[in-house]
Structures are given as C-alpha cells and as structure tokens.
Length: 114
Image 1 (cartoon, one colour):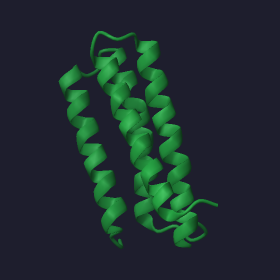
Image 2 (cartoon, helix red, strand yellow; image 1 turned 120 degrees about the vertical axis):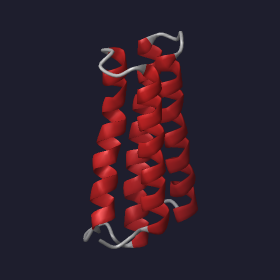
Image 3 (cartoon, helix red, strand yellow; image 1 turned 180 degrees about the horizontal axis):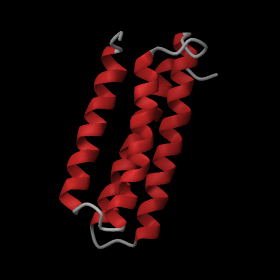
Image 4 (cartoon, rainbow, N blue to C red; image 1 turned 180 degrees about the vertical axis):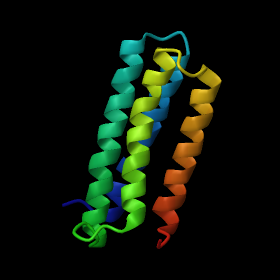
C-alpha cells in the first residue's frame, strides 16, 4: 500500500488530467483525445481517493462528505457530454466544472461533518 502523501499527489494529478480534458474538449482538439485525458483523470482520482480513505481508516464507515464527493465526481464525468451535445455553452460547462472542483476540494480538505 502506498503512503498517504503519494495518494494525495496522485489524486491531484488525476484532477489535473480531468481539467486538461475539459480544456481540450472546449478548444480545437479532437473530442476523442479530450475524453481520453478526462477519463484517465477520473480513474486516477477515484482510485487514489479510495486509497486515501483506506489510509485514513474511514473506508468502511464513509462519512457523508465522501458520498457528496462521489456524486460530484459523477457530475464531473458527465459535464463533457453536456458540452459535446451543446446542451450548455462552453463557458457554462467550464464554470460548473470549476465550482464542482472547488466544492470537492473544500469537502476533501475540511471534511465537514453533516
């Protein structure tokens, strides 16, 4: 098993890939390339996130903020579909992604009790 800092760094790298995917999707890059980076980032962030939960000893009795983060992770995964199908304008997708990412960061760092 890896150390907590390694999981944390991997988690951040995964989220960087997610947002690189958003940038590529909303620029002139091909959607296939964008979705590749986005998907890789989502996978890395999910695996490293569960690794951190296991290291913190809260994997078996996950608090509410973890379930909220999982729901927001699904939103991040779905946002490119809204952009690709032009359900939302690109600036709106970027704004939503930033808001979701900031909320996930808040929950992950402060771990509020609900």
